[in-house]
Length: 180
Image (cartoon, rainbow, N blue to C red; front, side):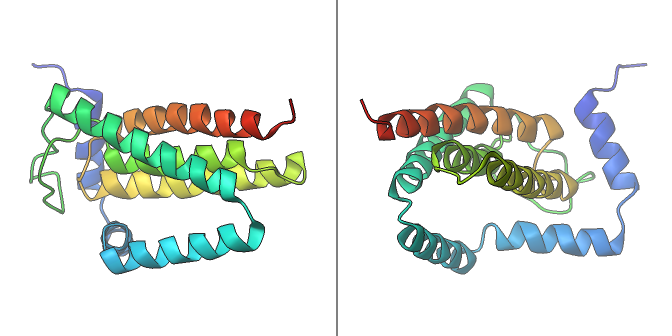
């Protein structure tokens, strides 16, 4: 008997245990995350928050981290050439390679860059923001796996890449904000 990979095992378990309500939530989340109108709306809300809080450094850190993480993930996709989960395990068809997840890399890069670069008023506030970001990233990543757009390790790798990029960029913007 051939060994079953972690990814295959998880994807088969997900496919075997899907529920109608969870499918509706996962599909709606996935659709919202790729709809231009929703993305523009989120961008406008972010812009308003940046202007109101005058959080220009964290915003630039987030933007730079997004670009670097997306490019890195795209380059790695072409290097690895890993196919997406097969249709018998997926609810959606997504073109292109799977590893690493560009969405996971980009969203975690933005979140970590903001968390690191933003001048939080207290450690407790920063911790609360980090928990909220982790929950949201985890939810979106779980949805990508649930609908079969990505293997679990695609999402994990995307988070690692995005987190590393976000931390590095956020830290550089945070350090540059400190007096010499």
